[in-house]
Image 1 (tube, rainbow, N blue to C red):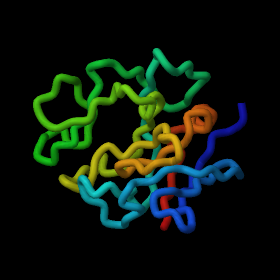
Image 2: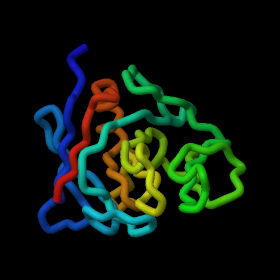
Image 3: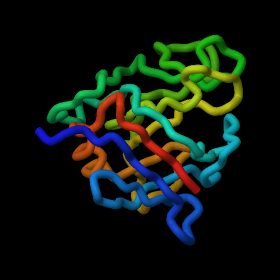
Image 4: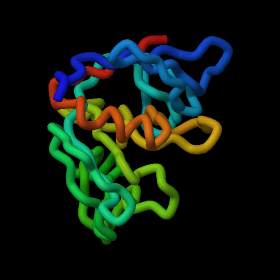
Length: 176
């Protein structure tokens, strides 16, 4: 197998606040960005994609929808109990949680295909600060590259093709 990608670069697509150009391995793809565009000062609920450099830490997949080829990243199958806490006052803010969960959270096993393959970016994970944003993922894009809530998204076929060449050392660099 060829080597791992060390860098992924994301820049705003000219004329499209909620779309970007993602470059990796000498190829460029259109990607979806947050409905709030790219911001240096991200806050919970602003819908913005954070500006900065983030490692890809791990990920999840729908084992009933996705057949993984290979992956160097730690990837876990999603279940009906998979959640992600977005309650800024909760001790598990911006962390994976088991459902049912008593405070505000996102259900990871979605009816749409957005989290069929979802990678966790190292945004506000360590150190974690309250209200600076949660659940910033690299996941499957909606048709037409409709905006995300702050994540970066690609078509499933492209994301699935990239996963075998991503590792915990891969950096995603987001610029304006």
